[in-house]
Length: 145
Image 1 (tube, helix red, strand yellow):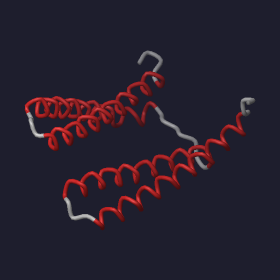
Image 2: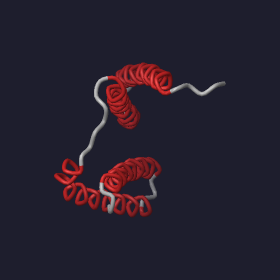
Image 3: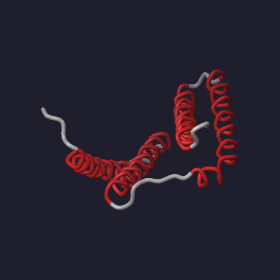
């Protein structure tokens, strides 16, 4: 298979993202339908988590499509500087929530609660990771980081 050139690769990326969005829309619909079929609070909670994640995935995919078709992504040092202190403060909050959740999980002996605490830990670690990516953006915007 030959590698696609720039424009072909971008078009293939856009097509793949649109297909993926269709899968996410189906997941949103399916989770909503399943939620209607059960009154079990645990099942409903898990389905709602998945549905909400699929909604967010769809939005991020649209952002990616728009960045390739409408408006390229841009970030200036000034834009990042405007919010950097608040981002750093929030990242500390994220780390604190991770610490708390890990302590709770360690102490918890109930399966369902441990499983949901694990979900929260993973999600909070994801937030910490995403904020860490902003640190990488900052290093690339400022030559002396």
